[in-house]
Length: 259
Image (cartoon, rainbow, N blue to C red; front, top):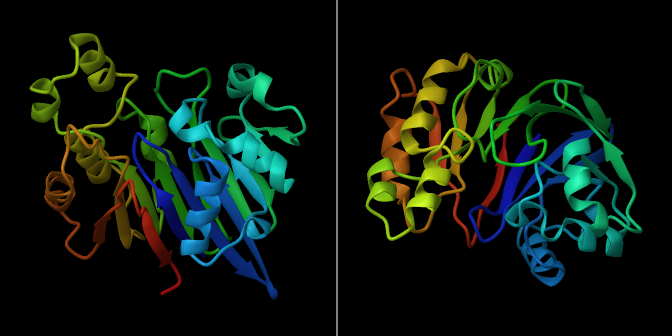
């Protein structure tokens, strides 16, 4: 089981999760906030074509996550999974796309991958994040959440890998040029996770199997990779956990959880 990012940030997000079993491979795309040609270009960078994608799973309707989903899915005949609330928000974009519904805590399978959506606090219609498993290893994904909750902490326990939002540094956000309403939205309980909140989540989850954490969805205006990395590395007991940071332009290359 392995995962890679095509890009992570407010200008577009897309994560790839792939698992091999019995001479076959399943690859899903979690969100797609890029135009068709840009998505195809970024897929080529990680050695894939659109024909390698078996399904697209959607977290919520914000443009940096769903902006390219339906055009890409329609062109390449790829099915899409999303919640009922998200469907209501994007219904006008779904024509010609095979759509399946999912809901909190109810697992579903795409080929050799099991995906479990879980509800998160974010200012969208019915936002979810996902835990993916190939039966042997688990990858937890958490971006676009305003605060820790007992539910998300439980869902992210005992994962082998974790993609964790580190959107902003609280001090940088407070002193930014953003208007007060936007600062309140980003830093509020239904906005985005600060470095400190992400560190709090990392400290709270069951890390007994955790071997790698990737900080993701960094604000280009209100955070730096150095600040996000320092916050995660400061969590007690993570000395043996590899910590990396995703970027908007390159995302990150394949990380193999089997190694």
